[in-house]
Image (cartoon, rainbow, N blue to C red; front, side, top):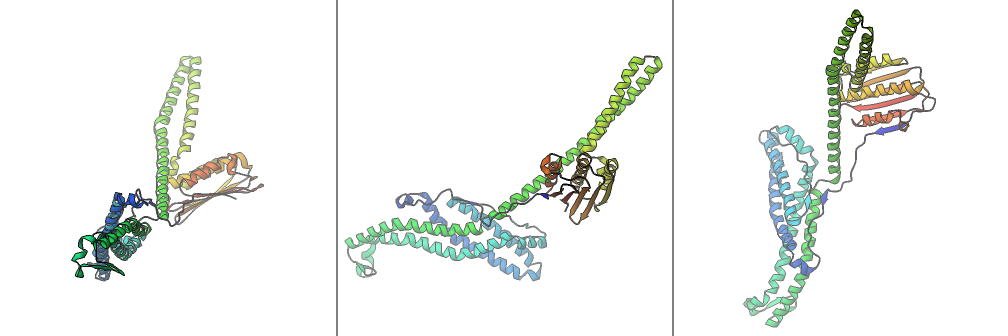
Length: 441
């Protein structure tokens, strides 16, 4: 059995964040003169402000949830707090982009509108809502660590470097640093030199570590997971492919109408005119010219037949007007072998799905006539919920292959174009059975 399935891509639960454009240099001297280090320090200090704003939004959200039983008061507050949560997250991503050069993909926001119940449902069912709640809850202790850490990182060395300027103003005119007593200028200068050296080496390293903690939290919860991004891309591609298929099918119907109402009608009028001219020429006794006109009339009739078949191949009008059962009844009546037809597709699916089912059956019956050497065939089309099942079989010699160039590969491509499933079973000696599942939800 050969199976062709339009599948969906899956992704791991990684985040879809791009690496920072700028990082704190590893060399202490380069780091101290780099604006990246100072932007990172400002970023870490601002964690406290963002954490406070996040805490305020979360408190409002909790209070609003508690007031939900009151209905008119709780629901608008929940929706407003949810909207504020996502707006604050957008500002946080912008902050990371400006101060750290870290690009974080935007999270898909829920629908927040005056339809409060629908907005609440969208907010609760959106996984990103819970990710943002987790982010701002965890940001509070992280902000304490980063703010205190960056404050100590710069304040302690700076305080010791300035020690020679103020140690005499301390009680007793001296300062004690553990077992080391600073009671003279040389000792104060020694402490300042050591503090300057150690601070120059350790401060950039500490800032790098604190920034790594901060960005790790943001990448983990503030950015769209890679799996979600891939799923969104797959959904977008599926929707765009469906639009392309629908547009192509609409174009086929337009061309069929133009051929039927335009060129075909002109050819019919031409054949009538040629017929009248032929009759007049015969009455006038000009048989040679009459024969030429009659030949032209026959060619016109042949062109009409070919044009009608071409239009029917593009999209039969009966399919649009009366549906699959009527369209396939005409096809089965013209088949060279008896065809048992069973079509039950109420309610009617979309015109695109109908067209795919129709051409699947017609191409399969064409293969039966050309290659199968069958004595009978059968066609079953049933609708099961949001799916249309199409089965075409024959009792011929079998041995059909998707790669054999019998048009089956084109059928499989047409089916996959609407996210359907195509299966072929054709053992040598028969029977050949084609099974197609078409989504129509």
